[in-house]
Image 1 (tube, helix red, strand yellow):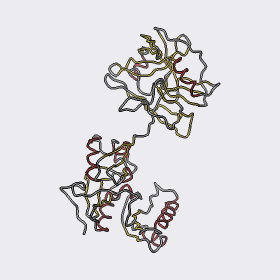
Image 2 (tube, one colour):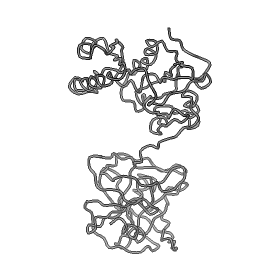
Image 3 (cartoon, rainbow, N blue to C red):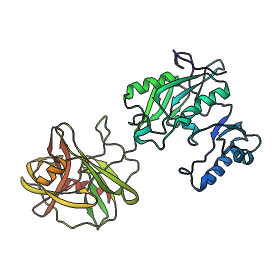
Image 4 (spheres, rainbow, N blue to C red):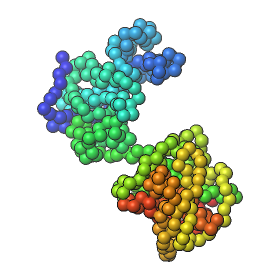
Amino acid sequence: MAKRITGSTPKLDGYRMPAEFEPQAGVWMLWPERNDNWRDGAKPAQKAFLDVATAILQFEPVTVCVSAAQYQNARERLPRAVRVVEMASNDAWIRDCGPTFLVNGNGGVRAVDWTFNAWGGLVDGLYFPWDLDDQVAQKVCELERVDSYRTEGFVLEGGSIHVDGEGTVLTTEMCLLSEGRNPSMDRGAIEHMLCDYLGCEKVLWLRDGIAGIGTVTFYDPETGVYGALGHSISDEATGEALPLGDGGIYKAQIVGIVHGEVGAPGQLDGKTDCTKFLGDIRINCGCGIFGKADFDGPTLETGEFETGKATIRCTLSGEETREYGIEIKKVYSSAEGTTVMLTVTDPELLAQTGGIVQGMSGSPIIQNGKLVGAVTHVFVNDPTSGYGVSIRDMLKTAESAA
């Protein structure tokens, strides 16, 4: 009989999660059947799971958990050597909702039963309810006669962690720092839990995928080069430009606005259409992102900043671009380039956004009928004001992307 271990942790008891390449005694699977998650009555998914189970069976034992409704179907289709057990679940992802097995140096085996909430609960989970999935880990432990630790209230999917077996765990910001998992815990508290329950000493974090809403400043139809944002895509912790691996720009629609307030910059909420690729990203630096693209836009001459009235072009709803009034207060020139301090004066823009908000970075600045630069940053303590970068500086950088 398996028991729940309370008042201790795996680390205190000398247990750790082994690396996935270490020897294992078998594999557990859940049989797919949800009609809202799997097409054609889950028949293609069942065939794929059948093939996976059959392949694994050549090397180690396989157990497949199946609902009462699907038991006969699965038993008839799966090889006789596969153990089929009746077990209720909400879906088929046992790597995420099943137990994390642990070992010690004396041949002992235990497990962690993490709280599971369908990848985000009521905030952004994939389905409701998920109570049957949250029971899977304990049921597996009972069948294996393995004692377990329950992390009641601490949400984690097994697929969000990876260990090297030597004291390091790899996880992602997208999962463990999301609002739908453990909103009351900071990074340090989560690291403490991971080390205690996986028997590790160090946690490495993979950053959330870098994506956001921004504005294209210019496009040169002769070279196919564009420039956008007016500032780099930067590391949130260090402020340095992130090394560029691969990336692209996609068509987006603005679907909402978070109004900017003193001390709390606003933002444009957008919906990105990842099927409408516009161009690649080849350069990520202090005056913007640059690459090759193919799209249309109005033609303008370029010019130099001067103090006085100007306009910015931006999109506040859908895909409609409009011009709004600003005033360039100061022009700063140095060997590193030219920047400006600007203030939004347009009553309509101020009413809708409060001034400059995130997502407007890269908005073209038009003065005397010429493109002179782009909006880059907002003042945190004054959302009506911010900075801009010179189009000359952006074009100079863009030459490297041609």
